[in-house]
Image 1 (cartoon, rainbow, N blue to C red):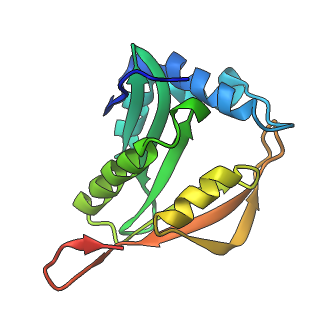
Image 2: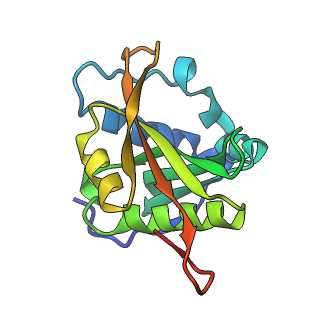
Image 3: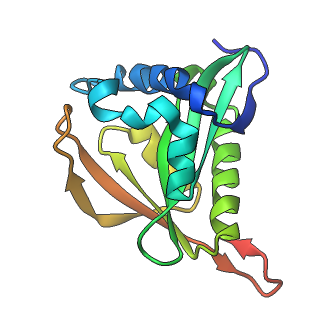
Length: 172
């Protein structure tokens, strides 16, 4: 159990090993969900540079120098649409509002970039994540996609519109 304070910061290129460990540990919770960094996650070798090239941002959550979560966002080819990217949090770090804090930072980044909506794709097996997205204003779309990855993954699509209220502030 993680009892220490968890801090959020922007990811650095040298965070790849910590992020890879988080993803590997999350994948291990699901049957048939293998992790192969070299084949499927080469961007982790320089994640901050990778995100910068895409016009996005990645955050990591850490405690005592160990990464316990990550959360990224990138602009898409669709004007004013951003996409959540590499959203993972170790089970022992959940239930503390950490994911909500990371999401708030990602949504602020998207708003600052002029986004009107944020989308994401998530493995159909990640039930806890689906509930988190729904609690935070995302709606599941009636589409799925198949990834020809090592896990033969199927993914659900979710979207959250970012709208402005009368004061010009962004709201759900």
